[in-house]
Image (tube, rainbow, N blue to C red; front, side, top):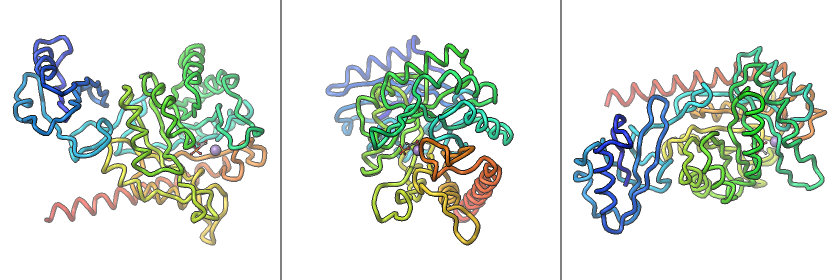
Length: 373
Ligand code: PEP
Ligand code: MN
């Protein structure tokens, strides 16, 4: 059960104290306070853990300062929607809004290789009014002899250049909790030139100690990739680890699942799960066509499979697109074969916008239909 306090209730107020005292006295129930930073306001939610079935919601609702009580019907206590349309969804980070209602594109390098390539990428993004990107500094590689990413040594120039080109948010994978500190320190040294959304990759979706560490910090929001060999439910529980440690600014990313049934694509595209995630949780939903499709093959209609997959996700209501680009894919140190070219960025963004228009039209059709009933 979740007890949601009114937005004007202060932590030190009498009503706050009275309500918390009451909840603390409930036998066999633990109360856990969670602060939710919405786009408009900060909210206090109190999670009652234990056998809450016998509790009378009306009695708790009558406590001072309590706005309403939500009975939790499913898993994912914090991030779940629990069939309650009024729960806050979305957050703002470094001036960029992330929610289930809008769309941001993160086009960029799979892996940082040279300052020149980073700069060419960022320049192209600025030419197209983009303020988000992806840049991998710490790369989890299947083969121990493959390039592992430049790590913290590239962060100063990546952050400086991002600031120079007006980038507000960089999605950057971390594979160890020490990377979070390295990112924090470097951002400080560069005078907070930009912002970072910490990415947890598919190979680490169930790295529980990493999830706990990233969940404990409140500075950076998190982009969690679905695990490629586990169920959706298991991946959603992984997201809940982040929230249960205190960080509920989480974006959930679909990136395809591993099975030969997806051949000749790198993974089986799973973007039909976009609406499922929106129904089950309050997280903005991201799709990663690059790591799903994994090739730059084109069909007779002139479109890349990458673009078809992207559109499938966007037409289904995706809120973020993570896509690999590279100035010279043949020279990319990681995932060159799936990177689109910089002169294709404008085309790609226009294709994404067309798919988004289509989604918004579909949403209106649904609204009209339901209004008639
Ligand atoms: C990536 O986005 O660079 C990446 C490694 O993705 P994934 O974890 O989905 O394989
Ligand atoms: Mn990659």
